[in-house]
Image: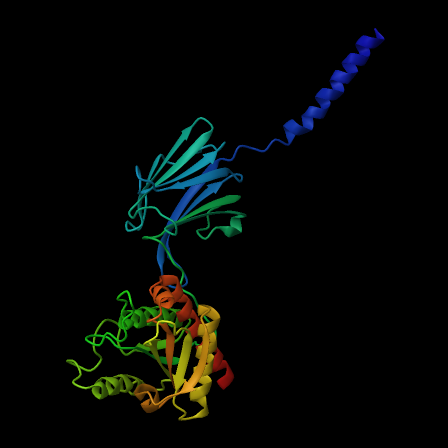
Length: 355
């Protein structure tokens, strides 16, 4: 009898130990609601923002695109109840996505967004946040699953401090019939200078600066095409002179030399005032820091656009287009972005020192 009683007691305590585990078992997450709105990033890029409210944090995986369904974004919620979410929901902002389909199957709830553009890295963003205050659309739920869908891959625009309200003239070197220097594989200087200048403009504008470019496409600046280099160069200076209260003039170029071994980044200025050299040094430091190429320093030069601009001016040489390695780098979008960011940071440092 004692053995039987002891066995029962042991069984009782064993069952008792199991009770807390049952009591603490995590509740099955349930979808509580859905809201959507077309919103904008801080740089103005629009996107469709969707919020799915949940009673608890779910386990989920995201699958996007693929050969069979390139325009489907699938979110697989494990051990989650569909709740009262409609099986089909039409989506706002038809340039981003058309509809959301929901289905519960076994231990899974599947949310399928039919997108307009192919789903790829950077074209969507899925995040989860706990707390009602995290909802951007005032969705009342303990947990918010946020799905952002862009019209193609989104690349955030970089920003810098210290250029807000500054007036900047950007001069992409060459253009039109003037190709500038040509690399060994046919890369043209005029294309590189425009690409970097456009990226630089976007950074500066996103940072609050006012930017005027001497050209925004592949053309001569002198109306109808210049007959002489002097006409073309003066036309670029005139663009800056026509902008009231312009702070600086920056001309963007690629370096070139007969020897393919020549390499590195350099900046030129004409010493009209002490500010010209200071601007050149700040731009040089920024490019070297971001681009990582050999520091060729700053030098005085009588280049037309820096000499005759009536504001602090500098001419940057990004890298040598005649060098095989640097030519490949100059053609690379990320290297161009880094150089643009370095120039923008150099401008910021120059303005900070001039206060």
